[in-house]
Length: 433
Image (cartoon, rainbow, N blue to C red; front, side):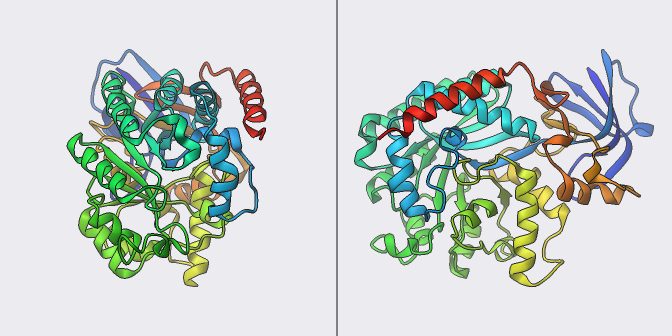
C-alpha cells in the first residue's frame, strides 16, 4: 500500500470540502482510506509519497473524438452541417487504424497533462484507440461511431460494423481501463432501422449508447418523419435508457428534458464547442432542475481545439451567468463536480470521480504555487482558484488506477516529439483531396 500525504485534499462527494493535511491510502489501484491526516488509521504501507499542493480526483471528459487532433483547425468558421459534410467526413473516410492510433496517442497525452484521466470517445477503428489508451495508462469508454454516408462505405455494411462492435466489447473484457460502447452519430446521420438495431444491441449487450442529439438549430425538422422532436424520435426507437449518453442537448424543450429525466439518460454539456460553431446555449439549469445528470466535455479537438476541461469549466460559468443574467447561476464547485463525480455517473461509473474508500485511484496533483492561484487565504479559496486559475501548468502528477501517468508535468513514457511529427505527417496526407 502507498500512502499519499498532501497539503490539501479534495475527496469529492456531496460537500466537496477541502481538507488541510490530507492522506490517501492506495492499495492495488483502489483507495483504501482518505481523509485528514490526524484521523488516518494505523497501516502498513510500502511507501509514503509527499504531495506538496492539492490532491483531487482526476477530471473526466464525457464526450470526445480525440483522434480528431489530426484535423485540428480544419473548417474553421463553418457551421456544423457544412463542417461535417465538406471537411470532416471526406477526411475521416480515409482514416486508417494507424492514423487513429497516432491521433489518439497524442490526444491522450494532451488530456493527461490537463488533469484528465478518463474520456468517453465516439470514433472509428476502436481497437486502434484502445491500443493507444492502454499504452498511455489512460482510461476510456470507446464507442465505435456509426454514420450512413457513401463516403464511409470502406468501413463495411452497418451489419458488419455492428458485428465488429460486439467483438470489440469482447476484446475489452481483458483491458481493465477500456469499456466498449456504441456510438450512433445522430438521428440525422442514420436511418430509423439502423438506429433501432443499435438500440436493441445496446440493451442486449448492456453497452453504453453515446449519441449526438439536439445539437443543431434545425435538427428537429431534419428528423420530423421520426417524431416531433429528435428526443421523442430517439425514444420511439428505443434508444433512451439509463445507459444512454446524449452529447450537446442544446435545442431541448421542457417536454424533451422531462422525457430524458424520466428515462434516466445522462447528458454531456460542451459549452466551448457549442460556441465555436455558434450552435446555441444549452438549457443547463433547466436540465439540472429536472434531475438530469449533466457532465462537462470538450467535444473533439477539431471543433474545440483544446482538450482542456479547465477551460470548459470557466466557459460554462461565464456563458450561463451571462445567459441568465445571474452571477450566482453556477458556482465553481458546481462545474468541478460536473467534471468529476457527475461525469462519472453519466458514464455509468460508480467508482470514479471521488477519492474515497473503494474508488479507483484516479488522482491529480496540482501545484498551488502557480501565480494564477494566489493568494489563497483559506481552504474555501481552493476550489474557485482551481476552476478560475487552473491550467496544465499546474498539473504536476496524474495517477490512473494508482499508476503514474503524468510525472512532474510530463506524460510518463510518451514520445511527444515523435508523436507530434507523426500526427503532422498523417494530417497532411489526409487533407489532400
